[in-house]
Length: 253
Image (cartoon, rainbow, N blue to C red):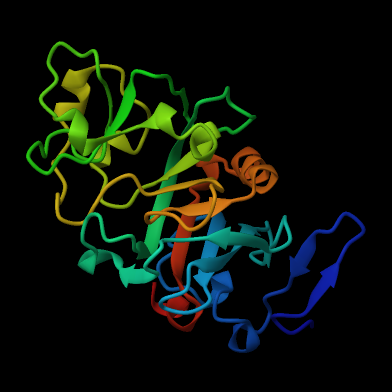
């Protein structure tokens, strides 16, 4: 029997983590996480401290024998410019990354799908991610500017094409998202407004995306090559979830 946390580095650079004894596994290991449910793929992001803007992203997949393995080595990441806050206490426009466990169900990008199995939206200059607190029906949803039924303000939305590097490829973290929008991409305004409104206080547009010049406004970012690898690995059939928090609090996220 191999104790949990014991790891071997294979020729391809893949770290295999055995989980026979969860008591000695690191706090970020899937066997130590409380809210992953039936997820068979888990992305774990740990911040260096509560206020740090630097983080580490790890990936895990559940094996047929119930153990977990890491398909990729740990990846350097960035998070919000004001560190971390518990998701339910987050406030819009504070530059904090929400702590918690969230589903990953869709992806998008200004470039074509790099090979992910997630429903993928090829974004264009007409796409805006809405954060208008006066329009809860479309809050935290992507919307076309040209829609004849538009009710949100352009000053309160993020034009995706304005970030050609960061949004080359991105996965949507289902933080504060209408449930109906997290299964697949809708194509009409009517489909969006049937979704249950969410809290306009907590904030919107929390993604896993390509690195920019530094820290983020609340998202988690990776090097481009790492982002593409993660996207290609993510599979909705395996019910992926992301767990995010400072390392000292990851066990409660």
